[in-house]
Picture 1: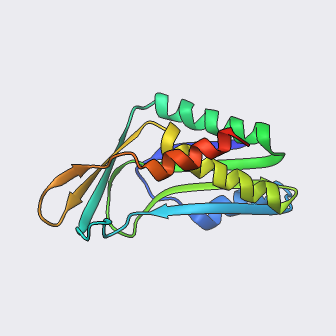
Picture 2 (picture 1 turned 30 degrees about the vertical axis):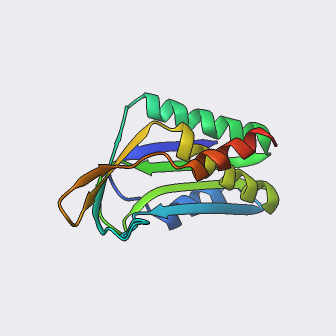
Length: 152
């Protein structure tokens, strides 16, 4: 059972975890990403704007969830990604995997976020304290993390 959601509204981490726990699982692992207030170059971020292509994004996320389910015995997984204008500290993304055993849940969660960072069609722009808006470039470290899963 996969839950894939792209939305502007915040999400309830406890409710999402409880939904997976209701599937009578042995373990649930999750990751929550939030908006950082500072970039690596010390510039202050006042907001993060996330855009996506409706329909295409959900299809890509469903494919990532299906790949995780094919690799590990999952009872369920959740991917929730927010779009719109978010402020520092706001939740951006929640991924979780539930399984009979912790190893599968932990590995699947790492896989989900690593692949989501590189394979999901989201565009991010940071609004800086200076008034400048900067599009966020893909990071080599994200590409390397996703590529490592292809070799496993």
